[in-house]
Amino acid sequence: MQAQDADRHELGRAWQDNGLIFTTRTGRPVEPRNLVRSFHRICTAHQLRPIAVHHLRHTTATLLKNLRVPARDAQLILGHSRMAVTLEIYTHEDRDAHRQALTQLSQTLGQGS
Image 1: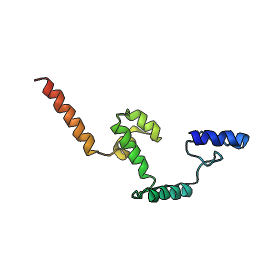
Image 2 (image 1 turned 90 degrees about the vertical axis):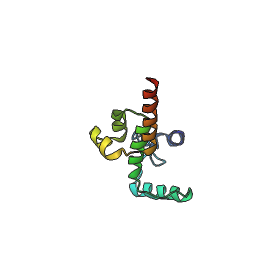
Image 3 (image 1 turned 120 degrees about the horizontal axis):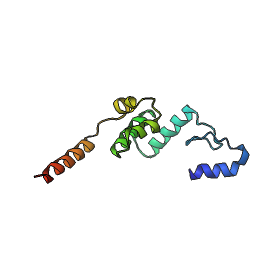
Image 4 (image 1 turned 135 degrees about the horizontal axis):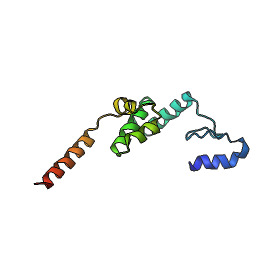
């Protein structure tokens, strides 16, 4: 946001405020092809396995779940019309999250004895 604020300040009236988080330096929406090229450039520069940009939505949904963000909030963040889409399609299992949940359950049940 700091970079966007600096661009907004520098451009003044020329800045196009669309309420978007990711924009060009003039505030316009990023063209999808440019976003994909930039994303793949970042993956290459950081030696990350390239994935489809859309898969970041699945990753975001799963991370939000693991952070215990309420499902309704995750739905709104991801822009899904129905919570079922968020929970059934975009949120994926995470073995570490399962292990942690079972450990917490075991500790809770162990406290009662």
